[in-house]
Image 1 (cartoon, rainbow, N blue to C red):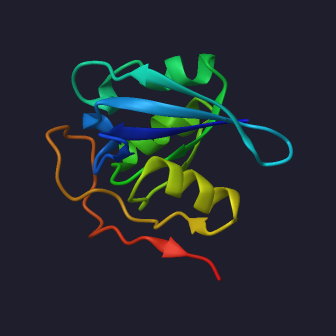
Image 2 (tube, helix red, strand yellow):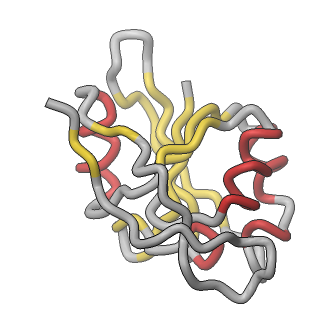
Length: 130
């Protein structure tokens, strides 16, 4: 399985559409990280770019993100990429938290963005399952 994280300076970018690059982790059936690769971010707003199809072609099945509008979330889901929003911190810590079952989607969409297809839903919170 492959997991993508929108990244800036090795931490989860606050907004997936403005990230510097995507860190893609390949996860084994034993839930071990076996490979890490970098995918350059396209110019412009992520929800209007071809990044969903690029990530789908690379075999990405899950996006662990910070803020993300509903339009971007739906675009990724249309490309068979599940989304967990509300993540923050180093990409290694976030992927390890997911591997331990400690992440769940915040259910919140970003409140601000230049793209008109986003919906205001309030602030993001990071939820950890116990």
